[in-house]
Length: 229
Image 1 (cartoon, rainbow, N blue to C red):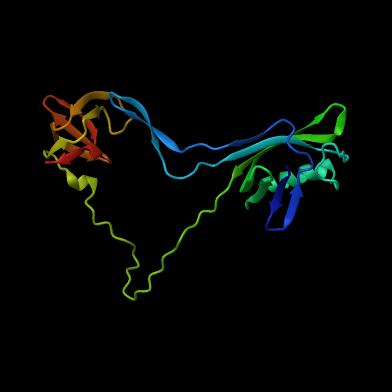
Image 2 (image 1 turned 120 degrees about the horizontal axis):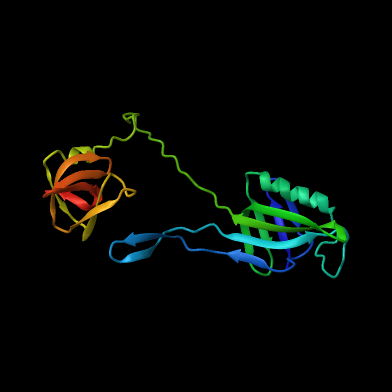
């Protein structure tokens, strides 16, 4: 196995002189969010796309070539190799990491690089390095060729939340169970529960929340779970 780090912008390839000493770690995680459903508990909801992968290993920059473990005969000094990695850690453009035998060929950035000097081997530098995979974000710009194009941007003709309800309007609950809170936000206390089909009276709109009253009770409900009747 050989490990290469390539600066494609400068056409420079660095061959790590020694393979990982203990292990080489590759991680991949699935993207999901955890939602808390009333009277059911937490559930995981899958999300599209990939999470950033991490690749890490530990090795050393040796002072002298040893054919028993060195993969590269022509060695730079350990200090120069260390400075090269530190310089690459600060650049914005990604590097290409190639690890033969395990089919790794990724654009990466260096997220973590630590090193140490071991007693009795002060001219060698031992290090741990972690890479994070990098992907290019592609953004398309659409240019209108129409001479009658409107330069003010798109108009949003949808009714605002404030225009949906006014004082005295009736609203029906669409969720199986809907929390009533003491204020307009999930950080506020739950003071009651409404159920599907229940009718409430609107008082005023505050952002995405409707201040309602029903019977001798009142509170705030999220407007995603009610409809005007």
